[in-house]
Image (tube, rainbow, N blue to C red; front, side, top):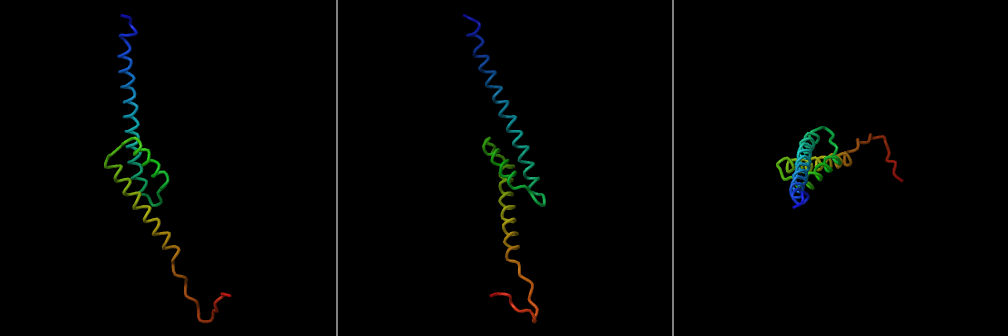
Length: 106
């Protein structure tokens, strides 16, 4: 029996374990990123594009934690708030005209 035949299963096992270690490191990083997303969404003016990207990365890695659900819920609420704020700014009442001012429409 040659030594290559004996060592091949050991090498395969090591490669598998190294791959899992990389996956777990990526998962830990993504979970850290999710916590940062939640912190960012609590700011006065959050970066929604970055939050969406980080959530997508976490979802792609298969993370199913409460942090992911919380970040998605908060992102949805922040987007709704931003939309309401824009809508309110568009529909703000104009200041009333004085009696002597004539309309400038043609």
